[in-house]
Image (cartoon, rainbow, N blue to C red; front, side, top):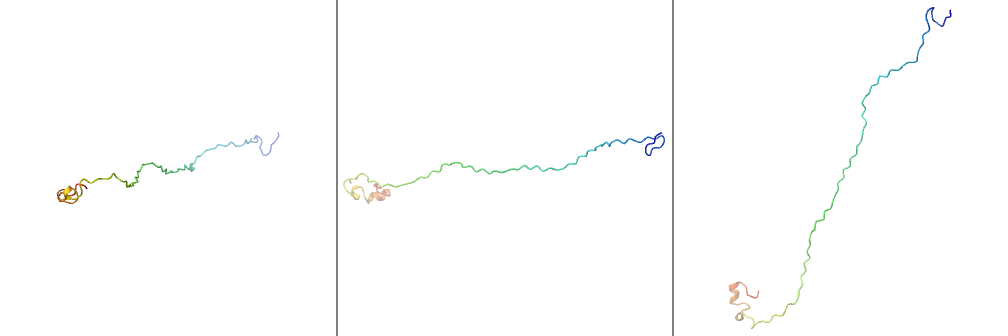
Length: 93
């Protein structure tokens, strides 16, 4: 009988197969930052509101000529006379 290596009489040399791998997966949490930029926009809107300005002018014009009736003085109903005291003013003012 033929002898192979270190084998005794009734023993055969073992066949060693390539290893099989059994994976036991474990998952561990890991935070990944996700950035969401926010832009605050202050919008300024103009609203037209009417504001009125008045420009005032004074114009002097010549009036029609006034012709006196009979004259001036208390006896003719004008000027300063007894009528002025009763009404507080003469009738021409």
